[in-house]
Image 1: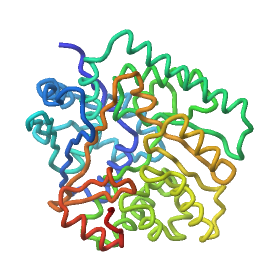
Image 2 (image 1 turned 60 degrees about the horizontal axis):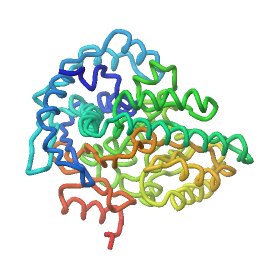
Image 3 (image 1 turned 60 degrees about the vertical axis):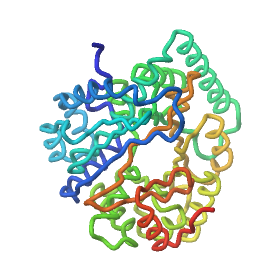
Image 4 (image 1 turned 180 degrees about the vertical axis):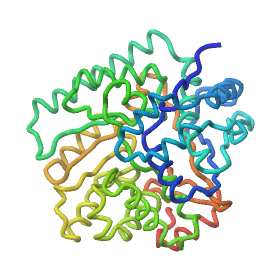
Length: 399
């Protein structure tokens, strides 16, 4: 038996805590179902990992938050004391998550009260990834990963310190926990970025690494947050506005970056009126053409007569260093920017990364959906609901 992959409940993304707190306060009664999906073809069947995944989940469900971890969370000004009290007694329940195999496919389903199952997502993805890549983990692969990492640091350094600066700085974040090669590798990458690019590397979504390395924890909301409101009793057409309003009331100026692609950017902007545009600090891109998305955002701010230099656009969809630099060159003189790089930092060592997700599929017994601006990222198990959602928001069915 090796040490479990997850040894701390802080080893997750910040947005899990921020969404968790909001849903605990606003919709604690919600029942939810999350399903694991691998979107690409693995080098060997993920079903072979079943026994190891089961063992890792047993270990995960034995963990509790430690006193120093709760103190760290409680010191974040947007985390409420009653949420910390909830976390003090929280423990993942093994009965709420099931692992099966269907041929070569690995099936993982978490089902139960949302405030007790939503936290499974990030540890499950980290566990599957690390177990899978252990078969590829050799000194040669690590050496290649370090070579690629140093090349990225060098390219960013040269760009930021030799090229003419834009009006707004180039700022980079680590968003790589969900698809990392391993926990140890993510730590090495984040430490090296912190050392090599101290004026550029601004933080990480990994709360444990932020705590231990003295970095800023980064994150606000993910798709599951807005999707949940499709099944909370509000009119479907109003679910985005309801989700944004609850967020505003919960955080009152903190955590002001809104995710835009749960029903597509156009439908989002139709709901993102002057009220929300003033209250939120900016927007996060996660699907579709990033330049087109950014131009739509800037046009929307212009229409509302809001100075775009007071707002921030955060890009996080499959970013590479080269793509981040390209986007910076396009937008840096017009709006504040941030770049959240995931797999390209935490799992770029040679072996092909897995494209794995664990998404909310049902809430309160009803299907929920994401109408992504990238058709391959649209997710829903119920085609009837998907068609209805498209009709309600006037989203065309992709060809």
